[in-house]
Image (cartoon, rainbow, N blue to C red; front, side):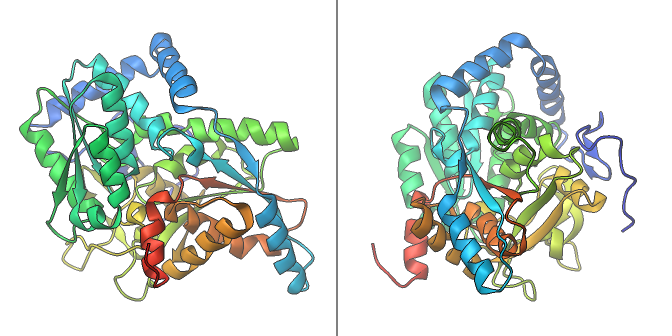
Length: 416
């Protein structure tokens, strides 16, 4: 595929049809199109509305706990400098974590859910549905639904229900109905399929609170804008703490909401290297991974055109990741566009590498990261020792790892 022309700004877009170059759009059932257009109209009304923004800022500050901290990971930096010295390099950049794990509900998901629940209220909707993989978006959706008095149904793959039981219990405590999905491999793709079926059936009163920067337009744009608070804060915080921008920023990419939230405010800073980390699973040679941008091809899924894992007949493949939140065979369309434009690098990290980064971060920082975030940390572990000591890396710590302790224990052959 030919590399698209470099735009004047990487922060513009999508266009009026919801396209980022050849990616994006709205490929939905005819019954959903009026609802999508209504959602777009309301989104265009509120995204620059001062009252809406003030209410969202107030909730983000006093309910969710923003701004999240930008933390100098001194223990990890020291460890990686020792690794660098052992290799005879005498380097090792400073590593910072953007601490989205400190938000209410334990991840970045609350940022988007607060914005969308206010939008649903503006639209006069009476019922919330959501999909979830790792359960963090389900928990955040159930949380905002409880806060605003909405009934909430969360679709979750049966496989993920089993490996994320703490989050399932949290959702139920919050009053949400969790509906396990047994179709396919019982993971995030299948949960999203069921949520879309529900939405088609209940278009009049239901708001679909999508958790990632994918789906039909305007979802990729609105999720990105709600999550961009991550990068806006990180940019201001690093300028305050270090007096300059970082050399490199890194985030894990499943559907891509935490990553685009960090990346977007830095996209026009040419001196900042931006790296997205895909789930390499058990390796890209087979099908047990979710690295759609490294081993996939463009296609249509869940209402948008993007990079997907698919066979020669165009059938979507299920893939695999140790992390439920990265276990998705596609990616948000803006990431696909950024990949082809060359502005952002996307690289895979294997299950074993993520597991080692999970253990390392827990040991040297006293922070248990989500397995999604551990993928991003694992890449930092690879590149930081070869960097200079005066360089700076920001890793988005998108969530805390409480939800993953059962998975990790099983991988380590231990029982809880």
